[in-house]
Amino acid sequence: MANTATRLFNLIAFLQRHPNSSASQLAHALEVSPRTVQRYIVALEEMGVPIYAERGSHGGYSLVRGYRMPPLMLTPEEAVAVHLGTGLIEYVWGKLFRGSAMSALTKIENVLPEEQLQEIAWARGNLITQGIPRINPNLDMEQLETLYQAVRQGFQVEILYQGKNQDSAIWRRINPYVLVYSWGQQYCVADCQLRGAMRSFRVDRIQAMKRLDTVFAKPTDFDPAQYLDDHFEGQSAHEVRLLFRADTANVAHDYRCCWESFEERADGSVIAGFRAPDLDAATRRVMCFLTDAKVIAPVELKTLVGERARAIAAQYAPEPREDAALVS
Image (cartoon, rainbow, N blue to C red; front, side, top):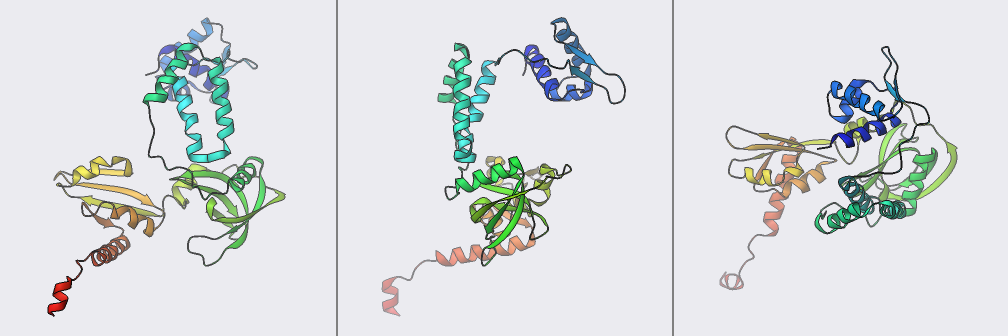
């Protein structure tokens, strides 16, 4: 839990990024009550931090223009968080940010006091992260870099793209809006000029790419989080629900990280759910839990899992014995 000094520091940082914030907004950001925010404001004023308030329905607290916090100050826990977070960059974005991440770590470590450096050294040897899908090794890093620059600078690109269910690749002109990492894959959410609609493109399926001189402006009302929830290829096409009986419910509990919904029932059984981009991906994931779970939705998935289960049973059926063949 953050102490008062840390919250005061975070309050200043928040006001630098979000001037004219109300007491309720600050309370939500700091996870304290509005009354506590008022005490923090008074404390900062007594410390000489120039804060002023604007009254009215659209008023709030702000820092005097031009005020900046003193040089970087991190608690040992904050130093560890920054170091561990930066270390994950290579896992999910590969070379795209590797150099910048390593440079940032070097700069931070050069100014940190011995206490923080010792904490980082301890964390490096005792807080180990495994199981995160690494960046797809088939990914063309130059194409990912071009898409990153297109998103950053707002220029169009043409891509030769072959979707999962397409017989051949076709050229598309797109306005790249955001890049997304999901389960080891990189996607570009873009306005597709060919389809006249938003689409998500898996970057490793792009066979060729051309940078164009045409620029575009991303709509101000585009909400990436909302789009990902509603339309994203790598996430939400199918809602899958599995029933774990009371005698196999422990399996569902052991794999809580796999479920986006989790319902424990009075009889000891569990209904667990997740979202999948397509029925094939859902089937492969569900097969990991047979015979501990039964698909209850969607109906099409129940059919596919049944077909796969029968195919597996046939593939591993006992082979006829040689002597039995001779007798017949």
